[in-house]
Image 1 (cartoon, rainbow, N blue to C red):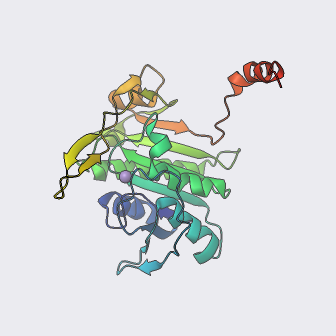
Image 2 (image 1 turned 120 degrees about the horizontal axis):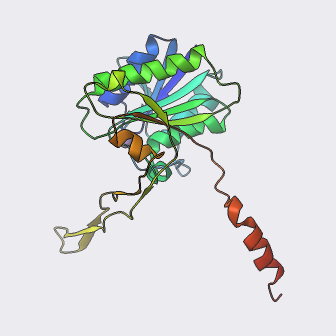
Length: 251
Ligand code: MN
């Protein structure tokens, strides 16, 4: 088993170390992570400057780029062979509902998936790493289960959110769909030393659709949330409407 480990919080993040340690008990690992915190960078690739890969004293590789850059460079330029699995995380905070569109944690896993490698994104239900050791036990069990019972269909991409709970190692696992969030809080306006306005992106909104069956609901009820993801953004239900609309266009 050869596992590529990545994240978006940076190569020094405790969540990466915990996940890499869990993976090293299950196979051979390579770690590629951003040099700096790259949370919220989604699937962005660095196209307008070259990337460098450095090796830390613990053997982790770090890249002066995004989470997607890390996995992209590892898969296409450095590893020289396709890993069996890409895992990303454990993120400092949840990636549920609409978060998945912005998440660098999910994006790093998705980059593996786009190259045909099964992939898992792991996130902690709350910021702060309070019970990271317990979350890492859960992550290790999920990975081991997927090694022992590999899904027949593949490649696949799953998004796992683990409640930040001291008893989470014995929590049930739930398969969920993504919930929805309220729109995020407005930007916070401040003034820089030159008297010019500057803006901080505000916090993510609360759950808007967090009913039973969603990732929000599972984590709020102390369960490990496992959401299978796909990349196709097509509004399939909307296709008939748009076909009719296009056919009636007055061209
Ligand atoms: Mn992050």
